[in-house]
Length: 158
Image 1 (cartoon, rainbow, N blue to C red):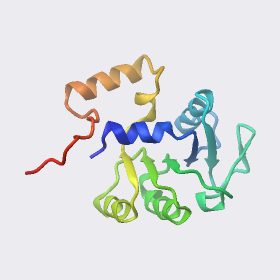
Image 2 (spheres, helix red, strand yellow; image 1 turned 135 degrees about the vertical axis):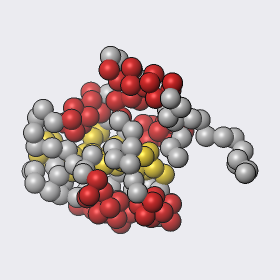
Image 3 (cartoon, rainbow, N blue to C red; image 1 turned 90 degrees about the vertical axis):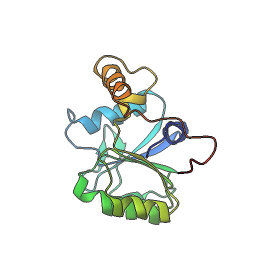
């Protein structure tokens, strides 16, 4: 389960690897990447098939970043997420945001590695200036009970 406190921790990091940023300027991943930059983050692009993204040097994987950040946003395909999680673990990255929902094996891996995970949410839902379709999407998630809750102050028993 993803809690709002995990999302807040992730968004409080100012240096974030954006894994899977597309070379295509009109791709969703590029919009997310540019939004992080616009909001003042040091967004580090990661794509093994690109030397740079929007003029910023790109890394082939997170382990190639000289001083890896504490957080990584995975915008990769669901099939390659497992490999990216292992790379993040090897790089010491403890805050993960996966755009695709993780399977149980990946969740167990993250828990064993001490990683906090935002699982399956679109980052645009949580940017401070989100509007339009993103605001509507957030409202719909709240109405159907799928919006992240605040983490309980005390462990839930039962």
